[in-house]
Length: 69
Image 1 (cartoon, rainbow, N blue to C red):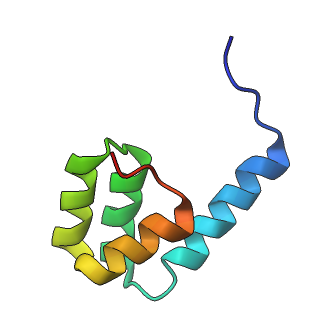
Image 2 (image 1 turned 60 degrees about the vertical axis):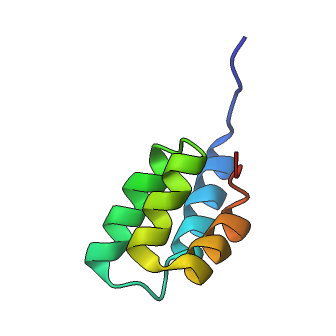
């Protein structure tokens, strides 16, 4: 059985993503959103580090509670 999401949950997640990415320019923000939407753990972490740098990548991962493995 799948997970049921309430509309408020989806809006809260979107708001958290926007807050985590607020200081990125629009082109990089779109790239980071694509990486986060197709999250695959270690491979995605490397892509994120390549785009925004190691420090900012781990800050985004922590703010969005993304799995690191």
